[in-house]
Image (cartoon, rainbow, N blue to C red; front, side):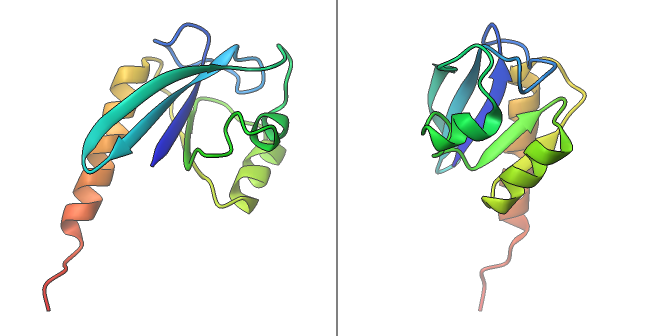
Length: 113
Protein backbone atom coordinates (compact mmCIF):
# COMPACT_ATOMS: atom_id res chain seq x y z
CA UNK A 1 0.00 0.00 0.00
CA UNK A 2 1.23 3.48 -0.82
CA UNK A 3 -0.03 6.48 1.08
CA UNK A 4 0.35 10.01 -0.35
CA UNK A 5 0.23 13.13 1.81
CA UNK A 6 0.45 16.66 0.36
CA UNK A 7 3.33 18.60 1.92
CA UNK A 8 5.69 21.49 1.40
CA UNK A 9 8.32 20.38 3.91
CA UNK A 10 7.93 16.63 4.47
CA UNK A 11 6.79 17.14 8.07
CA UNK A 12 3.42 18.89 7.90
CA UNK A 13 0.30 18.23 5.87
CA UNK A 14 -0.32 21.08 3.47
CA UNK A 15 -3.59 22.93 3.91
CA UNK A 16 -4.48 22.48 0.26
CA UNK A 17 -3.96 19.49 -1.98
CA UNK A 18 -3.79 21.77 -4.99
CA UNK A 19 -1.04 24.08 -3.75
CA UNK A 20 1.30 21.53 -2.17
CA UNK A 21 4.86 21.56 -3.53
CA UNK A 22 4.94 17.78 -3.36
CA UNK A 23 3.73 14.62 -1.67
CA UNK A 24 5.30 12.39 0.94
CA UNK A 25 4.67 8.88 -0.34
CA UNK A 26 4.98 6.09 2.21
CA UNK A 27 5.13 2.44 1.19
CA UNK A 28 3.57 0.24 3.87
CA UNK A 29 3.96 -3.55 3.53
CA UNK A 30 3.65 -6.49 5.92
CA UNK A 31 2.96 -4.22 8.86
CA UNK A 32 6.04 -2.05 8.32
CA UNK A 33 7.02 1.18 6.63
CA UNK A 34 9.33 0.04 3.84
CA UNK A 35 10.09 3.32 2.13
CA UNK A 36 9.34 7.03 2.20
CA UNK A 37 10.00 9.43 -0.63
CA UNK A 38 9.20 13.04 -1.34
CA UNK A 39 7.72 13.39 -4.80
CA UNK A 40 7.73 16.91 -6.16
CA UNK A 41 4.90 18.17 -8.31
CA UNK A 42 6.06 18.65 -11.88
CA UNK A 43 4.37 22.05 -11.98
CA UNK A 44 3.83 24.36 -9.06
CA UNK A 45 0.13 24.62 -9.89
CA UNK A 46 -0.44 21.04 -11.06
CA UNK A 47 -3.93 19.76 -10.39
CA UNK A 48 -4.46 16.52 -8.53
CA UNK A 49 -5.91 14.84 -11.59
CA UNK A 50 -2.79 15.82 -13.56
CA UNK A 51 -0.53 14.45 -10.82
CA UNK A 52 -2.31 11.11 -10.99
CA UNK A 53 -2.41 10.97 -14.77
CA UNK A 54 1.28 11.85 -15.17
CA UNK A 55 2.18 8.95 -12.88
CA UNK A 56 3.39 11.13 -10.01
CA UNK A 57 0.74 9.57 -7.74
CA UNK A 58 -0.81 6.85 -9.90
CA UNK A 59 0.66 4.07 -7.77
CA UNK A 60 -0.78 5.47 -4.52
CA UNK A 61 -3.78 3.73 -2.94
CA UNK A 62 -4.57 6.15 -0.14
CA UNK A 63 -4.44 9.91 0.30
CA UNK A 64 -4.39 11.66 3.68
CA UNK A 65 -5.55 15.24 3.23
CA UNK A 66 -6.66 18.24 5.23
CA UNK A 67 -8.76 19.88 2.52
CA UNK A 68 -9.90 18.60 -0.83
CA UNK A 69 -12.33 20.01 -3.34
CA UNK A 70 -15.46 17.98 -4.10
CA UNK A 71 -14.43 17.37 -7.72
CA UNK A 72 -10.95 16.17 -6.69
CA UNK A 73 -12.52 13.81 -4.14
CA UNK A 74 -14.89 12.46 -6.78
CA UNK A 75 -12.02 11.93 -9.24
CA UNK A 76 -10.05 9.95 -6.67
CA UNK A 77 -13.05 7.83 -5.70
CA UNK A 78 -13.69 7.04 -9.38
CA UNK A 79 -10.13 5.68 -9.50
CA UNK A 80 -10.79 3.52 -6.40
CA UNK A 81 -8.48 5.60 -4.21
CA UNK A 82 -9.12 5.90 -0.47
CA UNK A 83 -9.23 9.46 0.84
CA UNK A 84 -8.78 10.11 4.55
CA UNK A 85 -9.68 13.61 5.69
CA UNK A 86 -7.91 14.84 8.79
CA UNK A 87 -7.69 17.98 10.87
CA UNK A 88 -4.19 17.06 12.00
CA UNK A 89 -1.12 18.88 10.80
CA UNK A 90 1.83 16.61 11.59
CA UNK A 91 2.46 13.90 9.00
CA UNK A 92 4.05 11.47 11.47
CA UNK A 93 1.06 11.55 13.82
CA UNK A 94 -1.57 11.20 11.09
CA UNK A 95 0.36 8.51 9.24
CA UNK A 96 0.87 6.43 12.39
CA UNK A 97 -2.79 6.86 13.32
CA UNK A 98 -3.86 5.56 9.92
CA UNK A 99 -1.38 2.66 9.99
CA UNK A 100 -2.63 1.71 13.46
CA UNK A 101 -6.20 1.79 12.13
CA UNK A 102 -5.26 -0.50 9.21
CA UNK A 103 -3.43 -2.92 11.52
CA UNK A 104 -6.41 -3.02 13.88
CA UNK A 105 -8.81 -3.56 10.99
CA UNK A 106 -6.70 -6.45 9.68
CA UNK A 107 -6.44 -8.09 13.11
CA UNK A 108 -10.22 -7.83 13.58
CA UNK A 109 -10.77 -9.86 10.42
CA UNK A 110 -11.22 -13.46 11.37
CA UNK A 111 -9.47 -15.90 9.12
CA UNK A 112 -10.32 -19.01 11.15
CA UNK A 113 -12.44 -21.72 9.48
